[in-house]
Image (cartoon, rainbow, N blue to C red; front, side):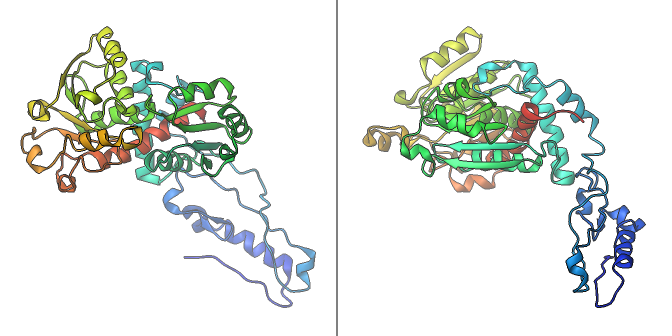
Length: 402
């Protein structure tokens, strides 16, 4: 049902106000969370912010018109979330990410990843049940992207909104960057408006530079060919969710391993697990020597190949990357290598029944659309997992328990 009332000429206004207040406290209104003064979706009622009943404020000027205008004048302060899930509260109470810059995969230990993944699981539960969880109401995330982005930008924005926060966005083409403003000054500026900055920049090391000048946490959303730590977080989470574990797997990374910041971050996290890594790429796009040196030091076994056919049959995960045209100074070289590896149904026929194909996206021609219908194609599910991981990360960096 619905509860409503209207003013009319000559109606006693004090009586009308009492009627409205009474309707707001009607048992059915309280039970469903729906009244003329408290319009909330019943679906969100268990975890959404509870809004205290409001006492109508009647303007004297309205008396002459016989109408009533209700303003937001709560009779008691609005309460925050009444019951925070105990698992969420416990995790946030012991957050290893609290007010830290998130710059590189190398910053973190395995137990910190498990904290992140545990909260991501809780975020998934809350989103699937209620759509949102208001952990960051009143917090502002500033999003600054000097390079194009769809998934990372939208994923962070959606994550912040589902946590009850607000997003302020800018990009290099429409900000004062075009006037020559330095990264340091841009970061200082955004820090005046928000509680956290999500930054994508074309220069390797730019996130670390920004962190030196920022009074609020910086999250590296990609620094050129350097790193992309939050993509690596969601990639490992995807493997866990899809295959049940990371340990004992053979993980094959395919494509542009030289310029692919996602794989640079991912292999650093995979070093925490007992895995076998295969690197498949043209010789000119191989994994950087410094990354391989780090893996060797960590005791991670890896092999390099030029032909995917040699390892497709043994792979539990095939992680495909796009050959990035924007990273090539020589377009002739790009044209030569861009289609070196293509995942299609014929290639998938050689793969295990229980395995997954992943891709950070966007894709160009390296995965044929026909593969999308294969249940082993995990790259669209991978994006959804990314929402939960980024919700968890934002909550761990900015949030607090209730």
